[in-house]
Image (cartoon, rainbow, N blue to C red; front, side, top):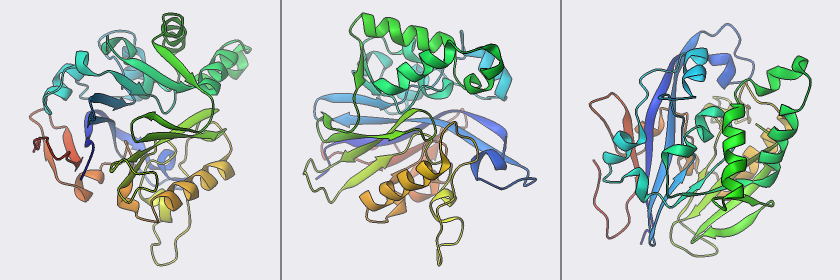
Amino acid sequence: MADYSIWILEFACVPDAPTSSLIFGRHNAGTEKLPYAYTLLRGRGHTILFDCGLNAASHGLEFVQKYNVSNWAHPRDVLAEVGVTPEEVDHVILSHAHFDHMGGLELFPNAKFLIQREELAGWVSVMTMDRKFRWLMGATDPGDIIHAVQLAREGRLIGIDGDQDDVLPGIDVRLARDTHTVGSQYIIVRNDGMPNSEDRYIYTGDLIYRFENLDGGEPDDPKILPNGLSFGDYTKIILATDRILNDVSGDAKRVLIPHEGAMADVYPSRTTSRGHYIVEVALADDDKSAL
């Protein structure tokens, strides 16, 4: 019995992302498509997003042009594929504050946002640093940080302090301090609602970009190989990845990676008229398939 329907919804892509930015050490290996996606959950009286994408129709356009982001679609069109409107989203859990994960704050007018307190405070601190440190803000929009602080003042953004169980029914968060960012978190879904769940999924945010990060492309002799572009400690990324794998008993298909196009091969999926994929990870007992 599944409590939540879970869909991974592509909303844009970078057609020519350097492979070396996705898999550590893969220099001179060319480029590949990097999908941008968020994950939607529906069930137990909630409509929940993990991350909220970006807004290419306004301030996000600067980053769209900077990183060659293509084929962006408004969440009204993306969510319509599974019968949801942006106004129905009541909670957004933010894995971290990069532009493609927190840039769509204003697009979900009725949502409450949850983020690690260290993550938001860390970016405020970086914004106060001398211009010579500006590389640290390379994937973070200062406007998003300011907007998040305003939402906190309004009571619509809540800071989480470290690991917390049941931030929403059957959903836990785990702080991965000083990894991809200063306060990245990953999200555990216990889709049977049980404390020792046998139906567990983990949404990674950008701790992991590819399935290959989990085994180094050597499934018979696996090694954890971190992503190629992070702002923290790579040893801590490797250790966080190991915790994620342990939490799903080594079952890589239960690791939900928002930038991994191969998710569409692991679970049932379809391609929309815009060329985006919809991946149906799980279906609640009282819900209808979007495929």
